[in-house]
Image (cartoon, rainbow, N blue to C red):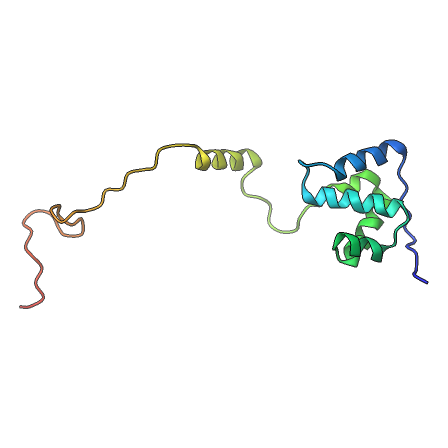
Length: 134
């Protein structure tokens, strides 16, 4: 007989409606959609192993999320802070960079040397042909 989780998840009618809406969303992030689906399955009484199999998640992930849902409720749907160095630039700067890079401007022209134009690598002034023989 499979062991049941000691962390029960119970949602009221409004929370369940919000989770169902999030689970069927086309604009929410995949992580939030998966967490909403796991939260609904946990509230319906599914085991951690069954949830992990049906959602193709590791069982440790399901256990961790179920525990968070038990203690934090709907707040557990949000991402955690990631470890490491803080971001150097804020979201405004990031969006400005993306907008600049993806703006529809004409492609820059590249000046390529032709056989008649002098090479930019040769010194200017009296240009003598390079000779490898002395």
